[in-house]
Image (tube, rainbow, N blue to C red; front, side, top):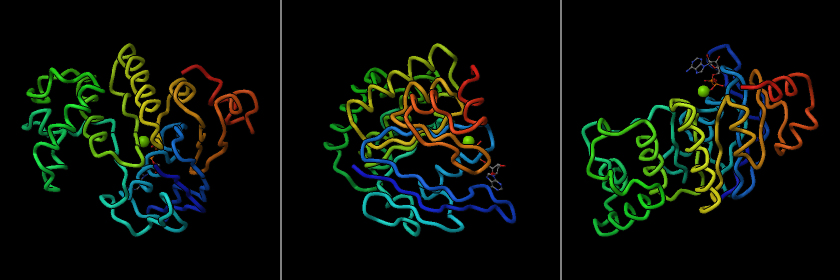
Length: 238
Ligand code: ADP
Ligand code: MG
């Protein structure tokens, strides 16, 4: 498991400052939700942690290591996106094991990992199907399976449920929560949905315009918002 620490993180795209001096200290095993309006910098910040974006200045630590110059594959993280990004021509099983094949892991070990993960996610019956033969919720489970099987120290989620209908979204939210309780892995989860943030988070970072306005437990944020922005954003029904 691992702590994740951001200090004085800035990100510019050309002349435009998108992340403006973010400090965030995430404990081992915590479930932190980054929440805020569209365009406030949530995905950029998550991509910086993942190593998919470089930072303009500042420092990112995962565990004991400063990872600013560490490529994504060496960061001990796994990411689940809103767009499922499954390989359409591969089966569910192949989608899940893809990374393992390229790393030369023995087939018996791959099978064991797949059966563990597919039990956890209730997708045992789907392993021989192709993504086109799955519902949205099933596809999202497979995408999570692919992340889980890597057994990383840190999970990163970018709006993983926002393509699902309301009923399924609530069901999957419960699944995500159960997975976290079961595995206890440090998780950073991006959403623009306040209810999702309140339900899932051990702590919430409320973002606005490249800043983290407040970082606290759901109760702290709800009962003691630091400013009108936080009060308005978290108080309004989604
Ligand atoms: P969020 O995920 O909170 O909706 P993003 O992190 O995607 O926000 O975007 C934050 C801001 O950065 C937006 O104004 C967006 O237009 C801008 N942005 C994101 N990626 C790029 C990029 N590759 N080049 C230029 N601007 C970008
Ligand atoms: Mg985004």
